Image 1 (cartoon, rainbow, N blue to C red):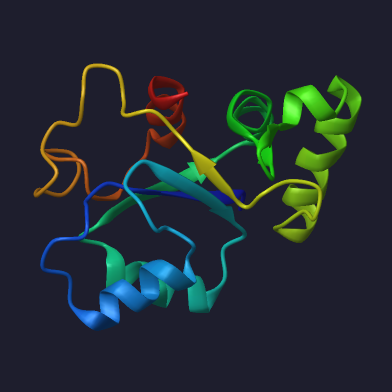
Image 2 (image 1 turned 60 degrees about the vertical axis):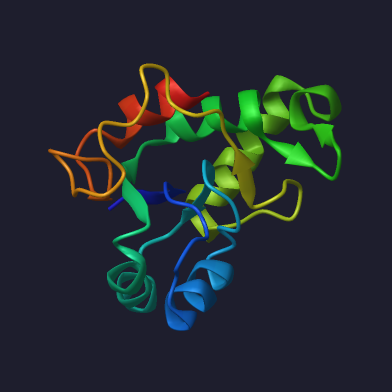
Length: 143
C-alpha cells in the first residue's frame, strides 16, 4: 500500500470541537492544504472523524516527487530553490519509507483545483469529500 494524501476542502465555519482538533492534529489548518501520511489504524480513525471536511486517496511516488518539486517548502523558501533534483528524490524516498522527512515542511499549500470543486458538501463521486480513487488527478489540478 502506498501513501495517503489528505487535502482539506472546507473552511472553519460551524465545525464541532472534535473535528477541529482532529484537523489540527493532521496539520490541516486551512482549505487547500495537503499532507502525506503512511496508512495506519490511527490515521484511518482520524479520517472517519474528518471525512466531511477533507478528501483523501492513495498517491504514488511519482506524484509525491512532483508535489515536492512544485509545492514543497522549508520555512519560507521553496524546496526546489534549496535542493537539487537528486536531493528531492532522496526526500521523496525518505517520505515513502518513513512517512515523513525533516528536510521539508509536512504541509503543502496548494492552489484551488482548476475547474473548481464539484460540490464541497457532497461525497465523491457526486461531490469533493471523502475517499477518492483519482487522487493523483486532483493533485495535478491543484499544483
